Image 1 (tube, rainbow, N blue to C red):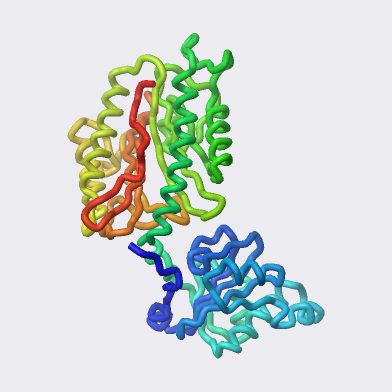
Image 2: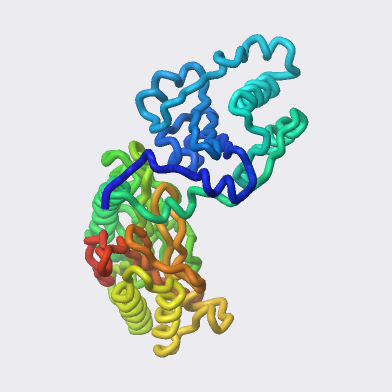
Length: 391
């Protein structure tokens, strides 16, 4: 699998939607913008692609040289090219002056009908309409493209996953090395808390060039809430869900992994839950290959749980297995395809998670998550970290 980062041609999509160009405005937090340009900045900038496949990056003047070096778009234009400072003098504010520059750029391209993403700034859309442009919101033309990862993107995800596993090792080792006293975990003679473990994870990720966003270390009944971040003391004999989904500061790609561990004696009901989650995950992973329905994988996971007497959302239960089996991962931690009750078909190059879980408020929750690459003849599990419940 090779990468062709120049291939972001959406001209057919624009023609189908009867528009002359796509405009995306955003910053480092806009995933489609980064995917289209391979450029990111803290300040807002604009990407335009016309139905003739002309691409333009419209950036602040101070970003011109960096954009020319880093972006895959070769036509770099700046505010000064459209006399922004002069426009500021007679415009009501600098935002209006920006809109005037953008309108002038579009006229240079002979564009009249523009497509914009659903989260396009309302003010700019209205201003362009008042300038005589037709503005039509459309679904992202890049979202489907992003599901098929290039070799470079796969390597980016693998590198983040390596950092993720090192951070997970740090967390599990702390719990493993803790002592049990009066039902609580103690580490270095102090009560071990969710906050301490999360801080250790995030420090490790920073050392490895990544950042943790919303890291979960959730214990006991808190773990019965799937995305409860966790707080306070960690207890012995209760499940501790550790979910890490770091982002590379350099490439902006994510990975995602979850493990559940317990320190001390594990009650039989928790051991049974853990084994059911592990079996359902193993069965789901075995099904992964190009052409496989995401819905079929999800149904199989639900069937395994129900055969073992656990509840699932298919029977409208609020407890048990209550979420999707997995999701795509890339520039965003949650991307397509969704491994859930749908008709999406897996393709070579998809990178997805498989993360079944069981959640009961009376005893807590258990989730195990790996990240998987769909290959030409099956799958490659990108997760090498062990699955060990009792530590």
